[in-house]
Structure formats: structure tokens, C-alpha cells
Image (cartoon, rainbow, N blue to C red; front, top):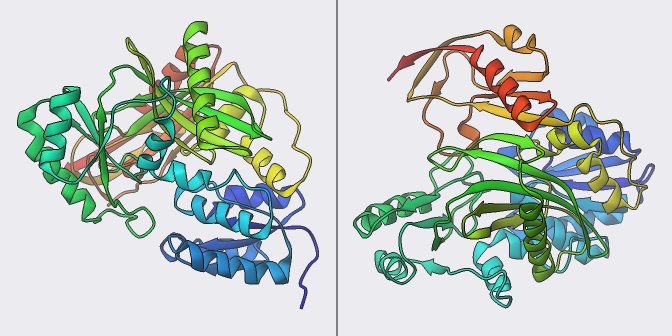
Length: 411
């Protein structure tokens, strides 16, 4: 029996923000969500919701096929890493627009990504899979130290480990094995299943937000990043402060990567390091950037990458660009200096009163136990600000963040 009215998007995972944008484009939403990530309040905004384990791709495809008979999806997408592979597989199965042929799966697996890049000398870098102390020591002996250990399917900076010398190899592998134990907060949807090693590249880190139509890649924003000692991102700025030569090399490398993995449609979020050795490709994802990077970029470019993604995958006209708010925008995160408990929080109003500040929010609250950030979800809050230059925007956000007073009780 058909249950069709307005066109319907099948959304795998997705926040209230994405649901609202979809409805604003004249679409209804059928949402699939992982049980541990479900937002019950979204049910009232969706035509239909169900919960399923996205890591069981075959079961997710079967459920989508059944729901498609009822709702007749105009498109399917996800901008959430754990669901990206299943979303692409559903699109391919139903004959809908997809990022490519198994592109999301390649990018979800850093080993598969490196294998795809190995065929191009300009994109290739040294790497190896790691299953033992011996693997790390052998790789370090051949490539040199420092090196980086990273989960092959990691997200949100989980389990990234720098190894500076042979004496640190055993300790690093012990930390990797702990990460493989999957005791972190979102282990059900973001499990760590293996590791690889790469040389450590010193330099500044950036993300490149792109949008692809019929295999043609457009750079929407180049984003500068601030990273702490645990490789957790603690700030973003748009546009990134790079030279024209650096920008050209970054774009060449990133579009080369996207071609190598076969991305044909939709957004991608690619991370790079730029240093004395040139541009090093870290990783890429067939989705929009996390940390609400699209919203930060929109303040500067006037274009909503997320709305464009929804329209593109459902065959609607892409929304027009609006007037930018400012030439530059920045986001600064608040983090805990040590393990403890939050006694009180104040100063949000003072932060919001700073000229140029767009928003200031805290996710942690009084009484919460917090610690040093080991992943993105350990951050406590954020401040977003705009300015005439990237430096001005970053300084304004940082100054406002300092006005937020957090009283700690250390443990």
C-alpha cells in the first residue's frame, strides 16, 4: 500500500538541524537511527522512524528496500560517519543518486583509502597495517620516528597515538590495544577494529570542504584547524590562512584523492597537513564536515552545504547563495584542564555580548564529571565569532571563551 504525499528523503542518522532543513526544502523525512544515537523528539518531525544497527549494512539495505515500497524515496543520505556506508549502499540498491560505487566504504576504511592512493605516486605515502609491537618497530625502523598510529576506522580523534622513539613502541601498542577494547562512549556505532601506522608529518592542519557534481569537484571552504596534544580538534577558522601556492597544492592533492577513490556526487570532508614536506593527505569522508563546519563556512560564503547536499541527492534545485555575514569566522572549544567535576558555570551572557560573537553554548553542566579530552565528544562547549580577518575572528572567539567562567573541583 502506498503512503506517499510530499517527496520523501530517507535519512540515516541526522540531527534536528538536518531534519529541519529537509522539511524546509519541501521534503518529508523517514529516519533510521542507531539505538544508542536515537533522538526521540525527532519522531514528531518525521513521517516514520525506525532504529537499526548501521554497521549491519545488509540488514539496513533490506529495511530500506521495504520502506521504499511504502514511501517511494526521492533520495537517501547521511552526514554521519557510522551510517555513510549503509546510505551509499541503499542508494545503489534503489537506483538513487549515490556518492559513487562504494566510495563511502573506501573512505570509511583508512587501509582501503591508502590502497586506493598507492597507485598514484603524487598521492602515495608510507603506511602499514599494525597488529603487534613488531609491526610498529619494523615500520619505525624503515620510515623513521616519529610516527602515528591511528584506527583504520576511527572517528572523532579516538585512539590516535604519536610514537616519538623506539622506546615508546611497547607503550603505544598497549594504548592501541586498549582502544581496540572499545570502552569509549560511542563504541556501538564507532568501533575501533584495527590500526595502521604512518610517518608523522609536522605542519598546520586543514580541512577541505568540497562538493562534487558528476565527478567535478568544487572547493567550498578551506578550514584552518587547531589541534591539542591528543589530536582533538579545539578550533576551526574560515578561511584558512594559506598562500596561493599552498592553496593550489592542497586543491590538487584533494581533488586527486577524490578522483582516486571514485567520488562522483555530493560533499566530502578531507583533512590535510601542510608543512616543510608539502601537503600530506590525512583522510577523507564522503559527507559534510563534522563540528558544524558547514554552518561556520556559511557565515563566510553564504552557501549552505548541508541544504545543497539534501537538494542534490533528492533531485531538487540547489538553494541559492545568500549574503555572507563576514569575511571570516572562527570557532573555539572549551575543554577541561584536568579531571574533575564542574561546580558552576557563568559568563555565557558576557561572552555573547562581545562584538562579533554569533553563539556561545555549553554542553557540560554543573555537577558533570569531566576530564582531559580524548575525543571530540569530551569538549565542554564552544564559541563562534566573526571578523574582518581569520585572525580577528579567532581572537574574538578566544576572548569570549575566556569570559565563560568554570569553577572546578579536581578529582
